[in-house]
Length: 275
Image 1 (tube, rainbow, N blue to C red):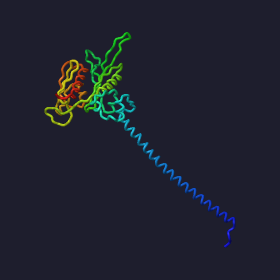
Image 2: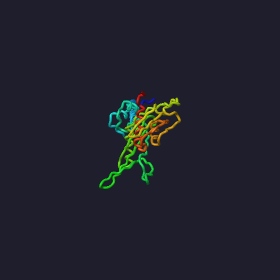
Image 3: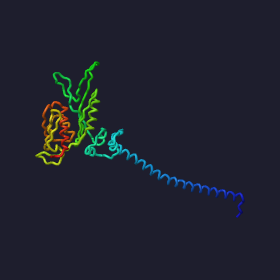
Image 4: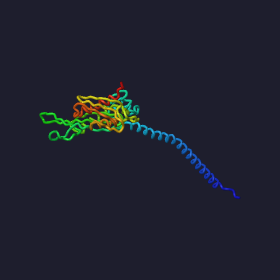
């Protein structure tokens, strides 16, 4: 065997040194990948936690009306989820100053009471929701529209409001807003003398409400009787969640304003203790 020359030895040494360098580079690359993977894990956890946090905020915001910025302490508590039942507010006699509180706690429905009359010969016009009046001025007649709205969830909560404006739609919006602010709780039960069911379908006892010369008396009725009242009072009782009742009315019943207010006065008396 011939001995290797110096040039061949130097080439072999270079080859071995290059291979060692490549191996060192590979090992350093693996270490860097492991370190990056370790550093990425907590970041991924933080990202998951951050993704969960806005979801919680959305749940809290969904309790209120979208875009609602409460101005009262009661409104802030409702939006933050501290108060989830409107009975907590009504039982403690807290004043509701924002209609969004009712919208966020109840699924309310609204109806307009027919308090006005369209123009017709000899008073023969049809009934309508807006009552129009005019004010005489030097520039001419200035019309004003007023309406009465009833809101309720058909489950023991109802309210009535009156709105006035120079146009019909603003008057309606004012009436609905005031009705939500005036919402109250109605006590219901089965109190008919010939009914013994467990459903909440009638007033608990005989109650009488008064407004002006109008008096409205509500009497408990058995299940299946229906609402034996005037057409405008049916709207109030239906939204209050009462399905069966007898009634008596006295006084100037054609004055729908006083008729509805007398019915509301009777429903408020259902919360009084039985003597």
